[in-house]
Length: 336
Image (tube, rainbow, N blue to C red; front, side, top):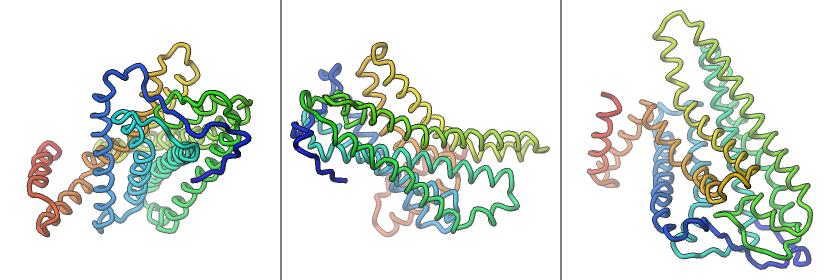
């Protein structure tokens, strides 16, 4: 996303991202786990999407939502982490304003889309558990397509004004961004002009997207829990809870981290800036790496599909045998 910034309102030709100033002496060591998480996020999400695409048994609404979640996780991790690694490895801190505002847009957009997908998955589980006999008539392919379109359109439209408002501010003094990527708050605080409109709109997005989604997701799971508690057999209740466990783990991590970020940004005088920056970075790279692993380990159908796909790849000469041997060894811990 390119923005033409008026030169009269902006007098800096580049922003300088400081990364993590308090740990510069060992930032190269920090780059190792970040690079590993990026590699895991790319490989795991690509493998999960390929498995869902190839396996006919996974062509169901729940797995369609999961494939979209993997796509967004993959894009989200690629928007920020490569630049963070260039800062840690090569001290390449400069970023062009247009690239900065584009990064700002995509971070807001992808986080909003991910939140919407979590909501769609919560509704899918609600219908599957509370109205199992009507599931196929409600969660149809047409319904899934409409939900995915709405999930993409809503945060995209709401995120467009964010970089536009930021680009119109007057950056007449400092161009040093106290962050590892172009976070809206970190960039706009450099402006000499008032940022009240920008701050208000930031709250509007947080409330209308993340806030509304969290309320609806919580409501869905409250209804699911009530429905499960009414089940007469222990086996049925256990099976119902097991289908939601993976989803709940990811939702709790996603929204709890966002809440911690909101608190730390509002309490800068009580929280170390390095801690807040590191938390922001981890929130953009840990969920993309964690999501496919949680579903791959806890969902038997996905695990079996990955094993079949890798075995087929070995037979056709695409993968090395050691990869399948490792997967077979890992399966011992998953199924036994």
